[in-house]
Length: 224
Image (cartoon, rainbow, N blue to C red):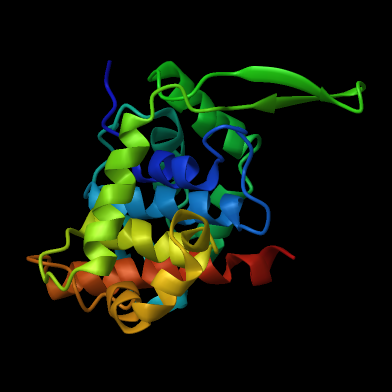
């Protein structure tokens, strides 16, 4: 079983309740998933950003598929419409993908991480839940975040920085750790989210990841 997760799958695991299989109330889950897809394409070296911040343009540097349906779908869309929008506009488009949450959750079902549970609300309205089947992948994700936040190591990989920053921007982080613990590490979290702690990553990657996360954070204002 392949449980090496993509960034958007890691975000989904953090957003879902382990037992309920529901996305936590008050989170910007779709926006987080949109930012995660763009961030994953950047981390995988399929795109780079031209420009600074939310007005940056995305340039496709490789169309080699990654083997993930969602990533390859949006990589193809970007390669066919290279001049059609800014970073924040593309992050917004991805966040509006039809059945986005279900598609990401179903990929985790196929990996054996989640299971599908059909239920009804008020005995009438059907809904699909995704309780956790294998807790180990989420434990690993949480452990990476804990090490990044609650130690002072300077060797934090870009993937973990991106995950933390997206979770912070989308109000997912408070459901992962206690609010008082997070408050005590406020300065550390801000340093991570601003790209100031990224291990051996070059400055270009750090700056571009900050731009992606900023785009994910402001998508709600664009689509509401």
